Length: 69
Image (cartoon, rainbow, N blue to C red; front, side, top):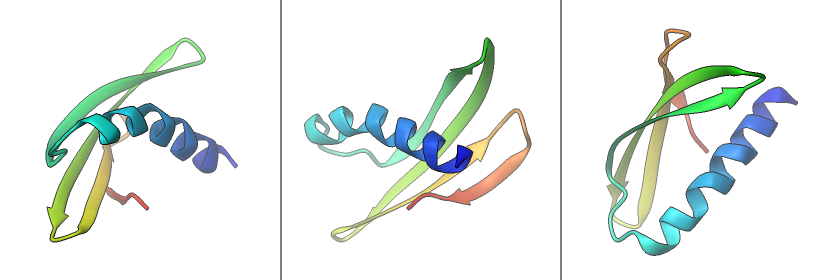
């Protein structure tokens, strides 16, 4: 449940950017405020034709290349 909530919050925050941006490819970083603590994240986004591919790193937790669906 927690992963689903996190993914939903992340997607909702990125959707406006997807609508306005011409190219989202690249390395994006940011922080989520969770219960008074910050969780630093990085997104690796690339485009292959019409398909978008992305992975996420949780920098504070040392987790890398988490698939984004």
